[in-house]
Image (cartoon, rainbow, N blue to C red; front, side, top):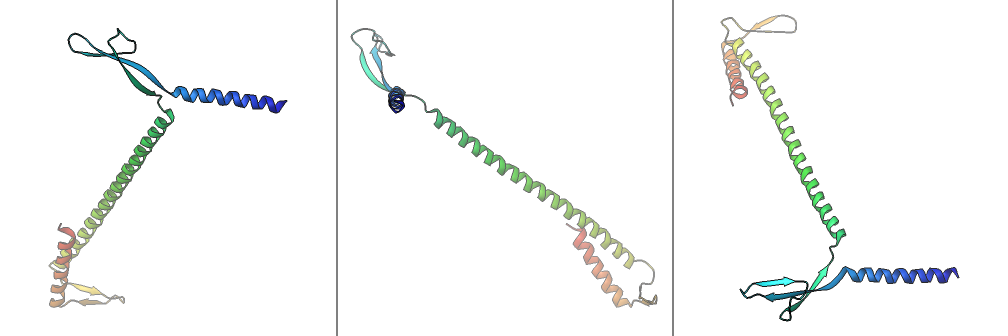
Length: 159
């Protein structure tokens, strides 16, 4: 008994579903006629007997396809947004790296200039050993150190 009712309900739902699917796509009648001035007109009702009937296939819009297309578009926009944020992040990292590089360069330039200035001071230059004893530099050593200090200034201070 219950099986028969379920079977009948299943058949009713199948018939209703078939009818619903059949209504998704139907042919509509469109009539065309030409007036005295040669203009072509289209209407859904015949105006007189001198009309031509056009068969037009009408399909309902597939809302699922529209939703899917929008989701794909939004996903593409999200991916583009992620790429943009990645580019911005790379730009920030590059900018930070360049700033740190300039700071190191400025510090090294200052050290090189100080060293160069000390080597060109009008006093006698010496090295201090661990035991506190001083060893005065020869002229050749001073010239070598001045040349090296000058090259360091050029390396760190010139761009």
